[in-house]
Each structure stands twice: as structure tokens, then as C-alpha cells.
Length: 152
Image 1 (cartoon, rainbow, N blue to C red):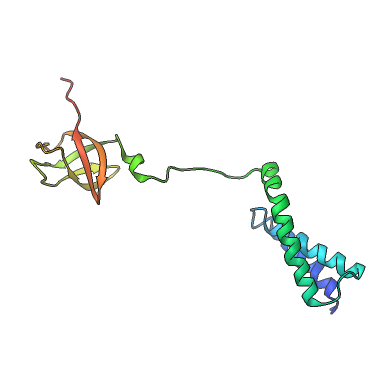
Image 2: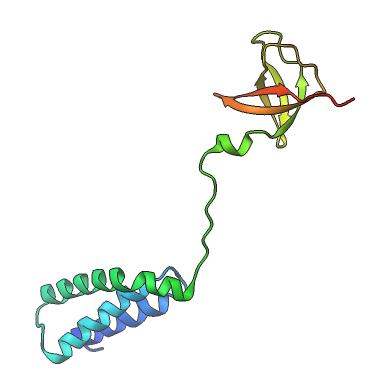
């Protein structure tokens, strides 16, 4: 086995660049490319010490990441999905079914909503079990609901 640092920089660079196939994201390949730059600088005699090699690797990694990461992500693409980060908006205006009567006043009841039972507060009137309600918002762990209009 060689004790030439050039060999080790080339080996680590190749391993990192191949690791991009297993660890996608467009970062590891640039770290490997920076290793190759260090190996080239060692081969040309531009750097001679370990400190210079790591400094060059650090600077080359940062420069490559800043310059080319967005370009490669545009070319290669990737999974991008933006979800709503406000849970309140996800439940607003959804329909639930009253399991235990709610009210009158501020008496808690229970509703079945999205496959789970939730404590629920009403609009002050009594809402009977079995009735469909609309979720207005959430108050701590309780859902605030109002009865759906009957269309008989």
C-alpha cells in the first residue's frame, strides 16, 4: 500500500463521488470533487503539507457547493413537496360526527374526526349525538364545531 497522500486523496474522492449514488442530494459528489482538486494540486506540487491540503479541500468544497449545487439540482431534479405547515388550516371546514352530545353552554362533548375521537366544544347550543358538524378551529386539544344546516 502506498503512503503517498496523492493516492489517499484520489481514493477518498472516488469513494465520495460513488457514494452520491447511494446518498443522493448533490452534496457528497462535490466533497469528492474537492478531494480530486487536492490530489491534482499535490500532483502539480502546488501544495506540500497536510494543513494546506485540508485548507484547499475545505475551500474547494465550499466553492463547489455554492457554485454548482443549484445548477445540478435543476438538471437532475428531485423530490420536492411543500405541505401546509399550519395544522389549523388542514382541519378548518372539515365535517365531523358528534359521538357524545355537546353543550349546552361550554359543556364538552366528543366528535369523530379523521378516524379518531376528539373532545369538542360547540357554539353554546346543544348539539345531539349523531349530528354532523363543521370544524371551526381547535382550542387546545378540543375541536370547536358548529352544527351543519339541516336541508330537510
